Image (cartoon, rainbow, N blue to C red; front, top):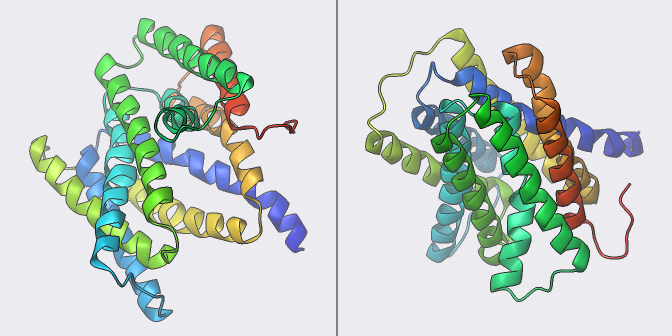
Length: 293
């Protein structure tokens, strides 16, 4: 039974993860982007803190650990997801947003080569070129069709950079931290940063319609909690490779879900660019000497 769950869980995780872009589309424009995220992180922080206290998970002992966790939380959750929400708020389609964010492993490989002196294999260099070329093809096609704005693309790109930075910082500074207490600190820092950004952007009042409230509940219960706990379980079962490989399909899943819900139609040229990007990301992420499934 456990073996079947290990095989099915990565697919379930990626499907859940892809709905984050759909939830953003549902929430906007009824809710202001940073206000929505601030409430999401406040409530997620409270739930994670409750679990940490009830199960007596250990909290970081050193003050510097709280600083490192806060930096990671702001980068990953506030700026990273903030870039996604602000991009979608500026008419970027859910599938296109997922594709742009899907370049994060490619950017991480470039950063590792530049700053950590990790060597890029020939296939990875080809993958880098394919990944960026595919995204340029899709974005150019959708902008020509009037789907999105340059500012929306810029915010999505900023989100991708922020997620990459936060991921590398997490690996460098937050190893060995309990995931529940660590997530509590990260969500708290992200909530504060989102509130500040909301004031900085002079966001107006949000309209808390059933769609917006449903999207808020989904992002907290399904994405921040269920998907996160599922990922922790997969890590404990050694199924990280399966999750990583299926991440290539997140943009496709997001685009397929957004098609009937929002009428987001991708042209043949855009679909071709999406396939090119996924092939590029697969080449970058595939371990040396192994053939992708």
